[in-house]
Each structure stands twice: as structure tokens, then as C-alpha cells.
Length: 373
Image (tube, rainbow, N blue to C red; front, side, top):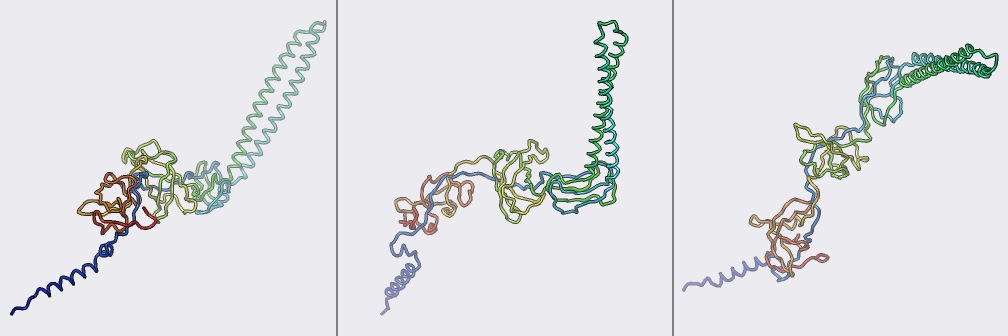
């Protein structure tokens, strides 16, 4: 008589069911609501940005040149030395310049003495003319002597004007001699660092010859060549984020957009002022990446990135409504930090599931973690 296999099949089926229940979600196995975490769908400003490579540039930099032709007595700096405004950089020979100043100073004194003499002569001639004028109605009056006295006053007045002009010329020559003597000492026009040294002691420099090159490393700006069609969001004072090659981040404010376009690259130079670079070591021509805004910010609806799952090629977000998980098919836009712009599919204020959404089923009862919702 054949043995029935139905009891054995029933036993195997029960074992398989137990195994399934043991591996299923605990909330389903026990008939409890699934525990989830939520985050509200909110509106926030969105600024679309594009990365632009920039570089640090010195606001003050250039060659210190000789303003007089002389031999170099001393160069007081080396390449790499930091100097303060007014520090001596180099000294030129000053013996000839000193002698020239003394010669011109003597001429100025002589011109001043000539003025004193001409004033005395004029006063004497005027005195004679006044005395003769008092005799005009007397028998002692002589018209010829009166005319001579008048001509003498005019001559001495002209002589005084000439002496004053000569004194002015002598004073100007003295000023030039003193300037030349002062120019024999070359000083730093601003705080900075010496990058090139052109001369040494004993060299002879002509007017305009370079002595050293300096740059102000304490007041660096950022310059970036921004595509002309992407400068719409850049206004003086606009703050952008930037990142150095080592990952250090800092902020920079737009100082000016140069109104000149490069015809080959169709870019415009933009100058930025670093806002917090004092604690960050920087150098001229150092590279930096700027996050340049494409346009003005706009308010957009956003959802946490953790709320988005992909099912059958669609972006799905579960929202909590009346204690149940409701799936929404959404269309996403730009990335906003750790959130996505929502173009449609969600409403402002809805609670999106950000944890526990991977195993949710449509309509499933959910329990929001304490402190949320």
C-alpha cells in the first residue's frame, strides 16, 4: 500500500513559513508600525554656481628705480627680505650731491642779499622823489631833477623785481638739489617683500635704472577671468566661496568687475577681496578656485537627498500622511548642499521619510521617531 507524502509536504511548508517570518521586517512580523525618521520639505534660496580658477595678485608691486645717476654705496636688502614703508633699501653716493646743494644754497643766499640791496636802493630813490615833490610849488623846483628821480624809482623797482625773480630761481634750484640729495637714499614706498635685486655696492646706476623689485604680500587680491555671460550674478560686495589647492576654504567679496572683455576668450577680469585670508598663508600667483554665482539667488522647494529612492527608473519620495507612507514620484532639479531642488511632486511643509524608506510599502503604517514630525 503506497505511503502518503502529504504530511511531509505540510511540514516542509510550515518550516519555510517560519524561516520567512524570522527574516522578515520585525514590524511586519509583529504587526507593528514601521519606525521612520522624517524631514520637512522646505523652501530655501538657491544660487547656481560654476567653478572658476583664479589667482592671487598684489595690489602694489613694481620696480624701485634710481632717481639720480650715481654710484651705489650700499644695498641694504636681500631677495626675500620683508621691509616696512620707509625702510632704507639702498644708498647712493652723496658727496657730489651734497657739494651741489651747498653751491646752490650759496647762490640762494646771494639772491636774497640782492633783494635786500634793491629794496634799500628803491627806498632811497623814493625818498629823493618825495623830497623833490615837496618843492614842486617853490622856486627851488627843478623839473629835470624831478623826472630823473621818477626814473630812478622805476629803475630800482624793476631791479627789485629782477632780484626777486633771481631769488625764486635760486630757491627752486636749491629745492631740486635737496630732492636729489634725498633721492640718494632709496626707501620702501610700502610694506612688502623684496623679490629681485638688480645692483650691488660699487655699481653705477643711471636715472631710471632698476634697483630692486618689491611686492606687497600683505594686501593680496584675487583675480579671475570669468566668462562674460556668467558675470550677471557678480556685483560689488557679492560674497563667494573659494578653495585653495590644499582644501582650505575662505570667502571673498567682489571689489570690481573690469569693464573690458578679452576678445579671444570672451572673459572679463573680476577682482575679489579675500575676507579671512589673514590666517591663511598665501602668495602672489597662487591658484584658488572660486564658486562664482551664475545669477541672483531664487527661492526653490527642496527635499533632503536621503529621502529620494530610485524605483524602476523613477525618483520616489515617501511622505507621511495620516500615519501612513504615501509614495510620490518627483522631478528633481539642482543640488542645494545636502538637498535637491523639487520641480514637482511635493508640497511645501510635507514630511519626507529620510530613514527607513528603503523597505516601505505604499500605504504602510509608520511611526515617526520621537522628537520629529
